Image 1 (cartoon, chains in turn red, brown, green):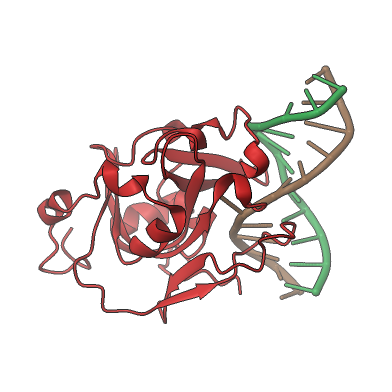
Image 2 (image 1 turned 180 degrees about the horizontal axis):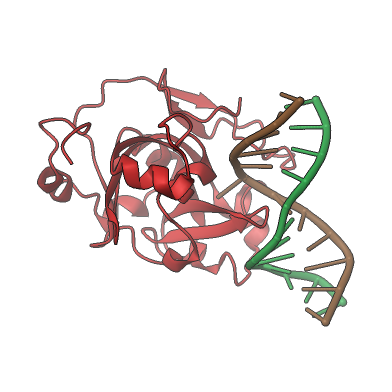
Length: 211
DNA sequence: TGACCGATGAAT
DNA sequence: TTCATCGGTCAT
């Protein structure tokens, strides 16, 4: 459990430093940058999983043509994104992969933060089983790789990110640089595809390989 | 009810 | 760079 988290970051400390609901009521760009370096923690039946958030994207909602809620679009799939910040938006892509987002901002403002990549820290053997991989290479360095490693699917759609089962803990020592870049896979979004709304930890080996 | 499609991943 | 992919979504 302690292996990679480090001596000053026990599970009890992770619990103490949980990001609170009020934190997620701010805008997507701010949250996407702020949670880099933080720990994402899941308690699963198989054991505890924890990983460092190393790559995120901000989706700005109704005014962002890359967003599922562009122009106020509201469907059964995305309706949870209109809830107050702090719940989870999970959706299926390509008929087989699950994408994990955190709903942020206030009720009626459907901004989201997409978590693209993690650096695995705790429960790595469980993640390998979930991915059917024998090595740590490529285990969590992509949006649908890490969700599979964590066993994430529609079960947690709409659940709170501040809960007993899963939460985010802040990392007090952020000794890294943040790189801003264009978002991946949103070339259809003529208005906002060029905006720098993707963020990652400079030099981190677990950032996704896409561009 | 069914045509359509993608905030990907893996192979090349 | 290309391509398989397929369940779910949503307009009808």
